[in-house]
Structures are given as C-alpha cells and as structure tokens.
Length: 457
Image 1 (cartoon, rainbow, N blue to C red):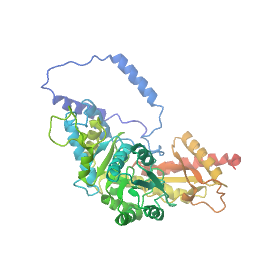
Image 2: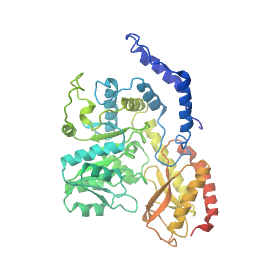
Image 3: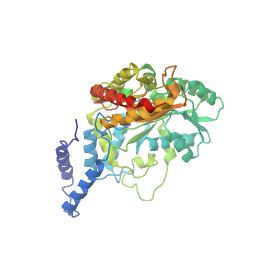
Image 4: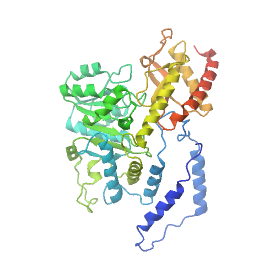
C-alpha cells in the first residue's frame, strides 16, 4: 500500500455515462472549449504542488486526525460535481437533498433517534456553532460550561454568539471533573453543559451518565460534542467508561458528529442533531426567491449555512449504502481495528522503561513521552523523537498536556506544568496490521534521539 488508488477511475467513468444518460432528452448545447494541452499542464503543476504533503493515506502517517475518504465516498463526490448540486434549497439539489435526509437519519438512528432535527454542515465547528446558538436562544444569558480539555471552538463560538462561557477543570484522565462541575452548577446560572465524547488531545470521554444525573438536579441543557468519538457507539471493544457514555448519548439534547473524521468522508462534512424537532422554529426565515419548487421542508430552513455542497451528502449516502452503520458490520469492525491498534501500541510503550505514558486509550488516540531527568528534558526529547521518526517515514504528532496526565517516575523533576509529548491517532483500520512496523521505526528513532541526549538537562 504505497501508492494512490487509480483503479476505481474506471468505475467513475462508467457512472458518469449512466448519469449523462439521464439527461439525454436535452438538446445539444455544446461545451466550453477545453485547451487540452494547457489543462494538462496545469493539472501536472497541481500534482507537483500536492506532493508537498505528508502521506495522510498511508498507515505510517499516525499523527493527526487525518483519514483518507473511502473510495466510494471519493467517487460519489466526484460524480456529483458534474452536476454540482447545492443543498441549501430543493431547487438546487433535489436528489442530493433527499440523500442528505436519508443519510442523516441513519446517523441519528445510531443513537436511537427517530423524530429529530438535523442536517449536514461544513464540519464540527459549524455544527457546534448551531448547537450553541440554539442553546443560547433557549437559555438566553445563561453560561455555557465545557471541560478545559474540550475543543477550543466552544469558547470561541461562545464569544462569537455573545454567550458567557467558562471552562471546568478536568481530572488526571482528561475527563471533565464531576466535583468541579457540580461546584460550578451550584451557582445556578449555567444554561448548557458540553460533554466531550473523545477529546481531540487524548480521546478522553467525559462521564456522560453522571452528567445526566446532574442535569436531573440542576436542569441545564446538555450538548454532546461527539465530533470525534460518536461513531464508536458501534464499536464492540470499548472500556467501561466509554461504553457507558456512548450507550446514553441518545439522552442528550443535541449532539455533533463528524463524518469527515471516522465516517470516511472528504472534508468538510459535519453533522448536527437535535433531539427535539421543535427547535426548527428558531431557524424560521423568509426568502423572496429561493424556494418555490416544493412545499416540503427543505434543508435551508433548518440550517444557518446557506449554500452547501450537495456532493458531500451524495458521498455520505453512498458510503453508508456500502457500509451500513450497524454493530458488527464492516464499518464498525474498522473502528474496532483502530482501537485494537492503539491498545497494542500502548502496551508496548507502557512496558518500555524508555517512555512515560498517560492512561490507557479510551478510543484510538495514545500519548506518551521519552523518560528523562525532568519534564523539560522529556519535552526536548519528544521533539527529537518526532523528527527522527519523520526522517524514517513514521509521522507522529506533538501535544502539550498537563503533567498530571502522565505516570511519571518519582525521580523525574517536575519543572514544568505541561509536558510536550508524542501523540498518535491510529484511526485507520490498517493500523492494526502496521503496529509492529510502527514500533520498529519508533524504537530506532527513540534510540537515535536518546543518543543525542547528552545536551538535554
């Protein structure tokens, strides 16, 4: 698996012929003249420029949350681009709008929702913006609370929406601290609590069942940012905390999930869902010209975004048609494989005295650092291992995390509150079969970095 998939281009050509046959009754209109030589030259230049990228598609890319779209998603997206539908209104995307509704309903069904309001959007940021906007409309002037390990977008969005926001401390596992949350709730001015189902730093899953208990006592609105971890509802190999949280996701008021993360989709494809369809009244608007071809509810009436690519909906629909969102299915097995890879690499790291580790992964993200005399020295070594690994085509990531997240030896000097560590997101199913190779390269890279350790203090 070294190169890029080109075999499926034949499937795209056959599908294009079928699509074209659907418009054969139209009179010939001609096409814009293409200067083949110039077009080829520009495309070759584009290909050359795109070579300046990490190999995100390869299992040896194990750094950030980057996962190649499934071939069917890539092909379906490309096929739709010959039409270029716009899912803001039925006028602009009749077929793709219906496909979006069907695909979103399948996502909602993962959490047991049949009556709901939801749609696709450009990604988790826009999806969370809509959720917090609705929360602000329903609880005006009330504070939004989220863990200090929640995505920074919640604080930023709250500023945009002019909603007061405060972060709540996390525990040493990276989860929202329940004692700190309740202490803050006792002040009585919290309108919304955001739980994170898979933090972007470590994949930690907030303790949703206990937060649901607090909602019974304090009456706040509950939003789940499951942009990263929501699909793990289908995985069979989660530990107890994550399993309990995902089993109760259907009890929140709103949630966000990102098909362009674990859902095998191209960027950008996010999804926001509301348990109560009545929140649609908040989106009410009038338009003098856009919506006269149908009296049915269209997606533009239940979203803040206007023009949106119908191709994203087509790609998602096609992927879920090929890989249904069911427990035990091929899609679910892919999630489980990534988690198995993370657990396998964690075990190797945890039993090697060259490293310090955080708690076992809850999803498929692991963090670790080289052991050293001090936290600052370990941070320097992390950067060296990062570079030495990259020189050997193993691409990791770096993160700055609280020292308390790690199981540090007592002799290690805690001269900083945060540790620059290595982070690996093993979200490709292929990672399970590549753990041995990843470990082999990491072993060599670490030894090379430690060989330079004489200058580290």
